[in-house]
Image (cartoon, rainbow over all chains, first blue to last red; front, side):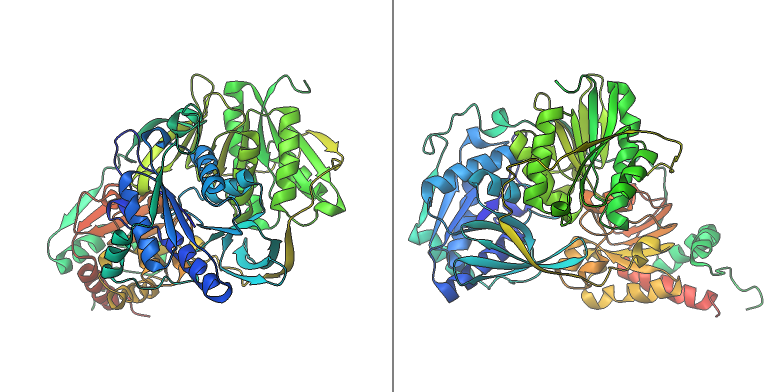
Length: 264
Length: 333
């Protein structure tokens, strides 16, 4: 189980999901899938994330859900990694902590429309087959994983041999409810291991912001500079003002006459 | 060296109408950008019986089309196509590779980038060449409220994926000519480790939202699932369609099909009503081309309000009810 939790190296700020100490929705679904597979086949689940020290909360949540242990990669030198370097770093961590893994499950992306690149790149980096955007999976005879997904208007059933990597969408595997006390217990049980660049034997020059081929030139708020009309007041009054000014425009698009009926 | 001139490559995804459109849209953008870096626009086509697409890409601005055609390539395969693209890129060294962000493209492009050890920016909403000749990729960033301008200064190629509908294609020009470079299926391709067992077309997501002249979009600001339902009534009155933001879809107030955003539908209606939507970039990028935007929000400073033509400061639900009431008076069928 891998959770992608980038943080902003420039400002040191976290993504909103992180600020709330929450696991990404898709990652949570991946965690649920791991637990269901464990229930059927038996397994040892390692939850892995890279992020600032507070990302530990996400691992505590994973342990509370049922993961056997959590691994936190945290190091300022790892910060600011783009997807290429993130997948490189995660792969080295997986090789270090679970070299004989059978299956890597990832959330298909961070929040809405994040890059979704880390999963496929991690499969490349680990040298295992991988399938993205999977909705449902099962383990068949002979260490074969069977997957179902919708890709470009086709419902596909795919198979690959383990070891492999699967990224999951949020369409199935609704995550189980974990009471707050469970997260508290997970905190106390201390099954969380922290690793840094040195612990993984990584060259600081090839990781983090430094090692990343992409570079952010500028971050800005999308301003359209539109000069708009502002209406406020009682809803009924605003409706009248809106239709007085734009009845043609709205009616034209709707193909309906919105003029006040003079005879009416 | 096979190539001296720099080049911009567009991956030709032609499997159906909408996937082909994004290829044409990327070609159009490549044609726009090419002169400033004196580059040649090229399309890359893998598959079987692809002549139709070669012609179409030339008619849409490709000066050169690299083709690997073989019955074995009939089925799109992420692993095989990745291996082909890697080999082609290593041989011909394009400066830029653009890939449509279809399901396939979003899995294929990251793998190609990984093999080539280069950067890739997902879901670009803008592509430009700067004064240093670098591809400036504008993409949503940091949780969705900001846009980032991203470059790949030294690694090559510079790679980007772009959602369908982001750029406008240029009209066919059947007079256009181009060079077609047919290459054999390379020997020693790895075996595909992922096996397609079964594939069936799922009910085509209808294009109602994309085609609607009036779209009524709702966000969490509508208050509840029950109140959100009123938007359907409003849409019916205006012969429109209902769209929604990601949080609304997550809360199951409406099905995923209604998602308006980069991961969902990209709309450009004549009139867009936006109810209780603050305006994360993944959503605004997908509604930005609407002709006329009427936004309703309690917060005048919400992004959606700033990008609207009419910003209505009100409770979204109450305004919706008032509008329905007034429209019912005015519309006599």
